[in-house]
Length: 229
Image (cartoon, rainbow, N blue to C red; front, side, top):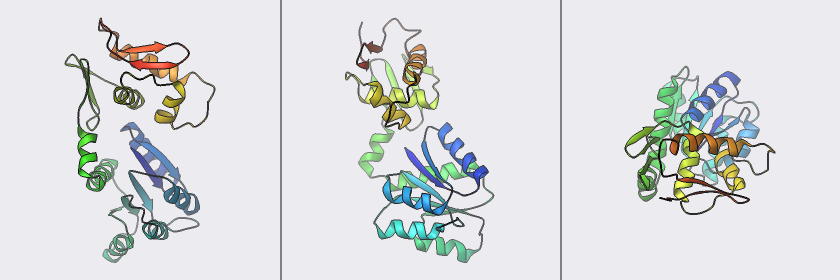
C-alpha cells in the first residue's frame, strides 16, 4: 500500500515516512504544496497525510482540488490548528480525519489504517486480509505474519513485500525488472545487485531450514516460487 505525506517540516515528514516504511508501506513525501498537489492529482494512493500550512499551495486547496477531480483517496489532515472551527473546515473541505500536532505515530498509523479499511471495497478488503497459502507457507498480508510448516518466520518489510509478490505470482517467473518496479518502485535499472541481495536474504529465511526449497533462480530470466520435492 502506498501513502502520500505532504508536510513542510522536514523532521516531521521524515518521522512519518520512516514509521510507515517500517510498517511495510511505500511512501511518497512532498515538502511543499506545489509538489504535493502534483503527486496527489497524478498518482494513486491508499491514503494521504496532508498538513494545512504549506508553502505554495495550502493543504485545504489541495484536498479541494482532489475532490473536484473525483479523487477519493482518504485524507488525514495533520495540523497545529486545534479549534473546532478548524476541524470542521478541514472535514467540510474533503478531509476524512483530522489529527492535531503534536501527535503519536501509533495513533496516526491506526487512523490511517482505519481510513484505508473504510475506503476499501468489501471484496478488495477481504482479499487484502485473506491469508495466502503456497505449499506449507502461510502469509497474512494484513498482520504481516509468515509461517512455514507452522514455524513463524520474521521478515523485514521489503522481504515480506517480495515474498507476498512471489506468492501472488507463484509458478510464474518474475524478472528482476518486475521486482524493482513492484518492490522498489524503480522504473529504471539502478545498476546495483539490490534484487539479488534481497532474494538471497529472503531465501535464507524461507528455505534454509527446510529440505524442500521454494524460491528458485531461473538463470537469465529471474526467480520463481514453486514446490519441488
